Image (cartoon, rainbow, N blue to C red; front, side, top):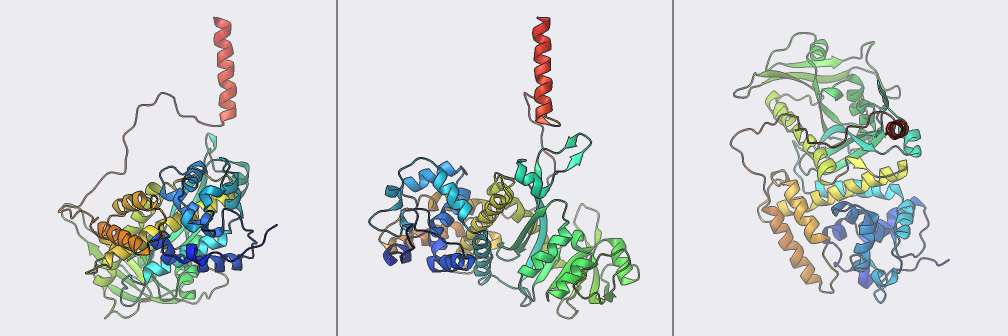
Length: 468
């Protein structure tokens, strides 16, 4: 058994790492997180820093297999992270097996991944704008799926319908995204039987005080507003028409701004460990009109009490930006391909999710840095997909070099390229139905248990052989 020794400062501390990776997650910070986790790491090939970069590379690359990560490392892709300048990692790996990397993933503390996601989000928000000196977080949930291993079935449960058990394991994920940088500030995953409203309490505990929380009608209930007050945050939640009338005590017209004390009814759920006193706030109503469409009234509840600063129009315009959270979740699930998770245990599922969110935050951090160059623009004007393509192509092929100035020039040119990846300015609103075309398929869909289907197929084959 060998003990840890101090890494070579020449290899670790030089800015020859992936620039944004080195800037946001320096070796000293990663080592502090590992020490806090109280997990002992021996001096292996896959050190915590190498493992962290491999997890990011695995998600950045189009091929997400562990074997592709091994090929990348053996070709020198992680040599710039080696603690030994004389024997780089590519020369130390002899086997073509992925066992060492797989075992390293299992040893890697989940707490380190969670902290790095939070840290990168905070770093991205330092240069982000604020709304009336408030950080703004967009909160929403989505569903991830995974294949039904025994460990996942026991932890997340199995859903049923009229055909029996669902094949796919469904995992609920709820996140809070910074409005101005797009980075994920807080995230939680639970079995799908846990409601998004219950997950919202855990999300709020991870956010800083004074944050304005934007949520749709799913979050517009007393229990979620109660949690926001407990954590000293300001909700801006949409209400259903019936709930808005009940809380306001009257029918609301467009432009109305009613001061209320929201008390829980007998039907409302409450957090037992939090104060159930009435919540002082406002219920506002404004009308959304779009040419060619029927206008509709939107009802909002907020605890931002000053109507002179937080006018009805300003609150309506701010809530109108809530749709960005749908795009952010789509980028996570589609561009980074986290919709279907490959892990076979709850721990590997969580590590896959948080390593994907860390990769997403690093892309967002690069976009924020590109937007801050020269004349500052909003990162929301840049295309995430186009920036992701350029970062993936350039950064995963970046090799170590002793010339720090060359790396700085390379990264500066890359940021200038990202700055040009702006979203198109469409003259008309783009509307698409939420439907897809059916594709030709050779085989029918499998319904029910595969073992039963296999048994039935064997019987059909025996019948055909008997007839022939």
